[in-house]
Length: 251
Image: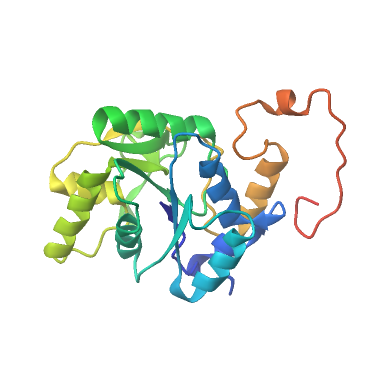
């Protein structure tokens, strides 16, 4: 499930950030293609803003068969509702589900594979990386305390779940009228289920603010095509490369 139902208020642009061009294609397209490139993924469900449903269909329809491997669902008023809508759009017989931010277009195949392997063993998995920064807990305008950094991780996506477990967790939250969740792991934790951690990747950045698009452009310059398992040197070895101008930072 690719969660792209947000309006991108923090991004500060009238176009939602998942539709902004990055290295020649909308951010959303990069993300979808990364998952389609993985042989273990059967179906990709794209959750989009209701007002952008037709545009999403147009963008993805140019490249993919929407009736087979890609399904489009409408998002809700919150991430929690959008995630639930995505779960309902999964095809019959779904066993496991990965939930990923549409605005993490640099997701690599190794991270996807770790999440898949982890969920088959543990039923609930979060993708995390260590925190390089010192984290401050404040009270008002003063520091309350500083936690031990070695115990802290930065959560990324994909998060992966046994399909029946995550659907049960969402339906439990809805029955309790809990609407505050901004993270699917939080719902599963509150349901009483343990969550296993797998390693993420520093390149798997989330585009939240306008400056993030420039960071992502630079990472794409140093990267390889979506779905490739080769290193950058292996990909370009023995080839002739033409670098042309473009309309974004990559050019």
